[in-house]
Each structure stands twice: as C-alpha cells, then as structure tokens.
Length: 219
Image 1 (cartoon, rainbow, N blue to C red):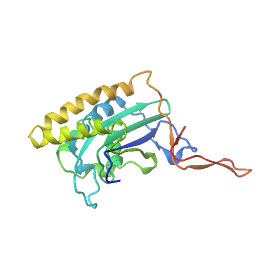
Image 2 (image 1 turned 45 degrees about the horizontal axis):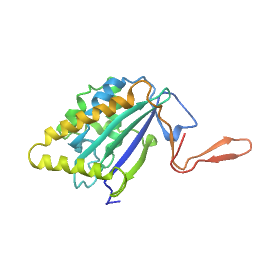
Image 3 (image 1 turned 60 degrees about the horizontal axis):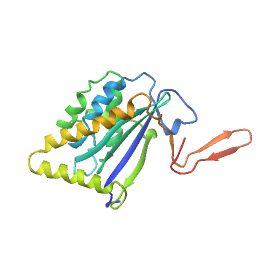
Image 4 (image 1 turned 90 degrees about the horizontal axis):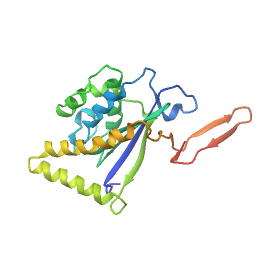
C-alpha cells in the first residue's frame, strides 16, 4: 500500500431517507446549496496543508496533501463527492465532507475552506461526516494506466513548491481541475450510482431470503 501513487475516495450524500441504503449513505435532511459547495471544493485542489482536517491524536508524517480531483456529481436521489490525492490524513475526507455540507446548509461561507487550509484550527472536527457514506473507490499503483500522468503532476507540484512557486502551482492545478468539476456537475452528466461494499440486506423478511451484493458492485 505504501507504493500507491494515488488514492480516490468517494462519499455518498442522499437527498431522501432510505432504509435500504441506510448503511451506505449520509442522509442530509435539509436542501443543500451545491453551487457554494462546488466553489469551496475547488480550493482543495493542489498541494495544501490539511492539518485542520486531520485527527490530531494520530501521528502525521506529512500534513501537506496533493489533491488532484475534488468534485461533485449530482442526481435526484444521490450526490457523490470524489476526492483523489497522493495520500490522505486520518479522518480527512469525512471532515472535508462535513465542512462542505455546512457550507451547503449556509452555516459556513465557501471561503471557510481556504481559511482552514491556511491556518491550523480545530473547527472541522465538530462537523465530521458519518462513516456510512465513505468508500475507498480506487488505489493507483505505478505502471497502471494514468499513473505516469499523475506521478508527473505530483512531481511538478513538489518541484514548484521547493522552488518557492508552490502557491502558483496550487492555483494552476485548481484552475485545471475547475473544468472537470464543472463538467461533472453540469446538466446532462450521468447520474451517480450507489456503491455497495459487501452489503447484506433482507429483501423478504417472511422467508428470510437475503441478497448478498458482491464487493465493489454498484447500483
């Protein structure tokens, strides 16, 4: 696992209650302002210090994380948030999602994400999203398709940061990713599919029949 070039996590937020999918989603009762959430998510892209989003009790060797993708895909029932980076800090994804949801609810301004990345604060811990909606979607290793491009981008960011151009590099990466973020949320984009990971659910309680869904299948 230490040889991985990139990891991709996905978090699933539901607009409606569902007993069937309860363990696979986070049901947010109030409507969310996705435009504000998408604006805030763009600030995550680049090589940034995610100390504010990490578990302080954990040992963290490198708090600066290179995020290459942070985007939403929306549907009538399900909204999925995808984030891909070279590594992740403990509880980082859940706290990022929690902050984005607070922005969507109007409790925080979109600029809050930039503040949390610029300063080390404890605020995001109180908004940690539940674990039910979080899935490790993909791990990319050297030699896999797309790995070389990701490695090159990662090294470019590191080189720029070492040369004192880290802010510009982060800005360029964010600008590049904005096109992908907007493309994934525009009208007509494919609706997100729900991820199952080894879930077992009773379909007919009277007969006791169960459906065991295979690992990493999608609905």
